[in-house]
Amino acid sequence: MLAEDGRDSADLLAELARLKEADLPVRGGKVTAYVYDTGRPEVHELAARAYLEMLEVNGLDPTAFPSIVALEKDVVGTVAAKLGGGPGTPGIFTSGGTESIMLAVKAARDARGVERPQVVVPVTAHPAFHKAAHYLGVELVTVPVDTATFRADPAAMEAALTDRTVLVVVSAPSYPQGVVDPVPEIAALAAARGVPCHVDACVGGWLLPWLRDTGHPVPPFDLSVPGVTSLSCDLHKYGYAPKGASVVLFADEALRRHAYFASAAWPGYTIINSTVQSSKGAGPLGGAWATLHAIGAAGYRDLAAHAVAAARRLIEGVADIPGLRVLGTPDASLVALASDDPRLDVFVLSDKARGHGWFIQPQLSFPGIPANVHLTLTGVSLQGVDALLDVLAKAAAEAIAAGPVEIPDGLVDLLGGLDLGTVDDAGFTELLGAVGADLDGDGPMEMGMVNAVLDALPAETREALLIRFLSALYRTRA
Ligand SMILES: *Cc1c(COP(=O)(O)O)cnc(C)c1O
Image 1 (spheres, helix red, strand yellow):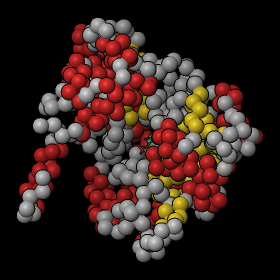
Image 2 (image 1 turned 180 degrees about the vertical axis):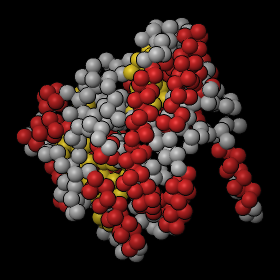
Image 3 (image 1 turned 90 degrees about the vertical axis):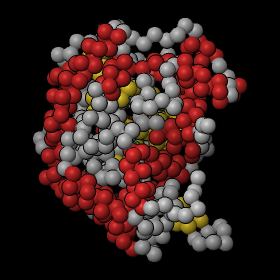
């Protein structure tokens, strides 16, 4: 509720600080997902100042605020130069990977203009493609990956192409197992059929090229690969910029124009939008520009080398932890760990690690891929990787001692057969209670049972339950 008289600023800021106390820490490397820390606080402080400098500038109208055109051209040009583009490579600065992907799918859809368009993706492609397809009225065709390497299978991808395919997608790397898809093979097969190819380098785009510069082998993946027509690269991941920063590049100007939107079909101001958002703060653009130039080429080479050295050390160390194994052969600094001991439940391991102050991200099983936990290592991770290995070993031993989560009898069948439309809010809260999820509890929720139950259900049931969970989380309770 809004107070009649405005509140004191110190009081408001103190309340924000208090609310954040329950959050995961965004610096220090103990959260191995969501956040990207250079380990160089001065870089993040500069980014915050640049963000504030641009905070109130509205990206809605580039003619009113020419600073955003200059900054965006600089950022896009910098990214393009490192990712196989040239001085004239067109791109768009967006709010994140999802928006970059949305625009790449829209551009491909509108460039082809076929009825009932399809986009072909490996199952490991990010859900942002499912979301783009859902929002843009495109059918998404998913193709299984090689279950030993987790890489997209060129022959299977080719077999999925039809006359209605407007775009083929590959990842560099994919998020779940951190492996780079065979980009040249798939882009060439697509090109031979006249189909454009998008490289989702959201997570790897600002890591792989720097890694290659340090002498690390990196397979070809960027815009210089024949057949690649667009590429997304998130600066708020390995660019270490504040959130809200990504770039989508296009092989030619005509394709970028298909990503744009203009409207003069109302009596108000004319709309020319390069992004899904219309009015938008220029803070993320200012923050990303400042971060890029503050870190510089040598800085990004060092950060990439550190992140990958941390991943190598993690992979070696995991070999000595009974019950754990690495999925596939990670190409960069994203690593997935599965259990090879039936007594070791990786979701329990994740909860135990949380108890030791570390966040290790659970990933549900998928046809051909076991349940696992994911770790994204960043520039700061190298200094803490031995502590991480200690925690993993401890958490694995504790998880084995505790044993796998026991799901109450009949609960999975009940949920699988449930019509959620008939369950009222009180009933859903009761269901959450049955899996040990207390929305009003303090401290981190124990997710082991929730994940075990979700893991036992098909994807559509998982999704329906998750949406219901989100609405329960945001419901105001007395
Ligand atoms: C993070 C990620 C995305 C989505 O990016 P957001 O910035 O979270 O919207 C897409 N693809 C891959 C491979 C990613 O890692």
